[in-house]
Length: 273
Image (tube, rainbow, N blue to C red; front, side, top):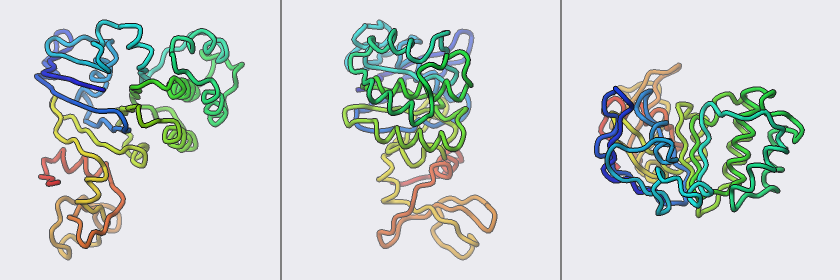
């Protein structure tokens, strides 16, 4: 699916963002791409989409070089940007023009999702709110059934009910032969839907694991005192005590706290999995 070898990239007149980055990812997962501001998450998605070109190295997506913008490549990939641009068209008109560009577009799925998001085909895209625009683009992206779906901050601009609907339609819409890569700062919004975590720091991938591997080895608990619990890997003060990462004992798994895990890794905590 994604093969990135020795990728080097920098924006004009800026320091090198990626230097000899290698990253491989197969289809069949919803992956969270996490990192601090400026880590290069959005840039990496644009490189995968062919909107930016590497200075050195190679990127292959489904066997295609993104920079060449091959029509077959473009029909099987979709990037939902943080600030989508939409023309002055109704939803129905947009579908009539752009849906045929995607060979596996499913109009029935599109209809179901926009109903979930309470959108109407007669609505004009440049006249609706930012949150409604985001919901439309997400609905369209999922309906393309493309092999690679890139989502950059998909929950920005969504209210709480819409975030819940987003999670539901994402899980129900994605097939095993697809790969969804989600770049976000809103970790709590996607915590229950991702099954793989990739963390970027200083232009390198510093963590890359399936969530089931994490929960098999680590527990995420709230404890009253760190002095009363041994083997704490990482902890943070919170109301009523501490949020802590502990090794799994007696095969007792807990729900993953990706934000806490991210903070632990950012603070150079050694995580053995």
